[in-house]
Image (cartoon, rainbow, N blue to C red; front, top):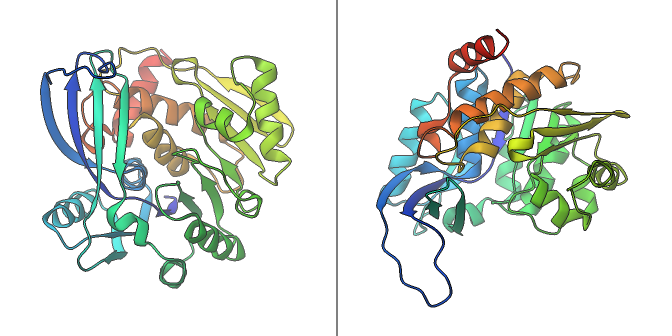
Length: 305
């Protein structure tokens, strides 16, 4: 069983079901509404836990009703919440998801307590695990401080640069793996990802800044992997997507639950993560859609005949 630390966000998702995005000035009616547990950090933590990892979480909630809801959801998934702080007088993070009939989504984030995850307490709370994962919904200076601590203790660091924003080279130099989607990668590098040459150039951009391994997720085109001079693409599993909200987070959580710390099984772990993501997009909601290891392995067995 892998041990994983997730530094990240905790949000309550408000999901607005709509036929399509409204045009400027247009008013449209929702076709449905739901609330579910979410946040990139929380999603990735649950995905790793459901794939069998022992997961510790570093983050924060407010002291509102949403905090109790989110803590219960994470605890029920087996995530260790010892290092999740409560910020007095603050709201727990929220996300407003415009879910189109096509399954595509647009998301607006209210950071709330996620913005209060500070470097000193996060580093003090850190305990060595095989993998340490972060995203960009908590402060970057906290991620850098935790990654410095993780690297010093021999943990493999994995950054999901989402939402995409300028990243200091000092942080990138601390990343063993970076896992953006194609849009995020292009935004960070300034290089398009719509050709094989473009993908290779994106990987070279990150390698030049000290990142050992690059995985660029390509939606229904699979995932591009570039590690130690070897590049390959792992095809996607073709499914009918209902809700893509947790696709990327499920991929990352499943990936770190399956990887060996020497990254020797990276191709197999990416295939496992791709199947987990394919299962997740076939159900509504972020946390509720994330599959267990048993479900992923059963689907892989069917796919392999």
